[in-house]
Image (cartoon, rainbow, N blue to C red; front, top):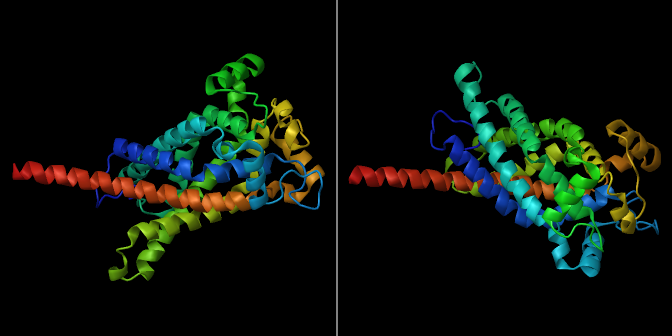
Length: 322
């Protein structure tokens, strides 16, 4: 049900937005711990190695244990309120725009809405639209997840007021350039590979084996997430480094800090001080998160769409009987 299907006119644009919101909400609760660990890895200047005595984090399990020991269980859901706003808003806008664009392409061009290239372009454009809409919330989420103890921001309102007064309104859009550059291919590849894998599974799996559709959606989504994340990961790291600009004093407890004057300066400094491997810091938890998150987002979206269709069909049947 991902993308417009002229043969199954079941989910409207608003219903797609509702399903995307619900999928984002459930998904965020489940993947937040991995997201916090990934952000901590991305922001660490020191090598992610146990051989470096200055490195605070050097592995997923070690990082999880240290965060739990030093900050408690709730630390894995730091920034969860803005993260939920992010997930709900992003899911709604992304799937609503994606469904609208695939429908538009099908109706006004010679391309099929089920074509993988169409899914790549429409998925990328939908993600860019959603990113611009929720970027301020994403910056807030990153700040909350990145801060240690004692906390700089005590609440969402306090963070918004403090950032606006001390850094100005544009601080909420820090890292937008690498985000837009990264999100188009990342989301486009997600939707495209999900479509390709779905078509491949329909060809491979016999008709009697298609009852496990939800499991298939989860597996296809996970594989699509891993592929797309690996190909676009460095840009996500650049975004995180730029988003905490002006926030260096809160990072002192985690090790060295750097000030970047923009995207190109960020790339140059990472290459000079951390080497090519610096561009892939946090890749392990990021891939794990991408597999879980992308798999679940498509799983929940398809499930909620199916539930909405079932409810609509039940209402139609009830009205006919009446």
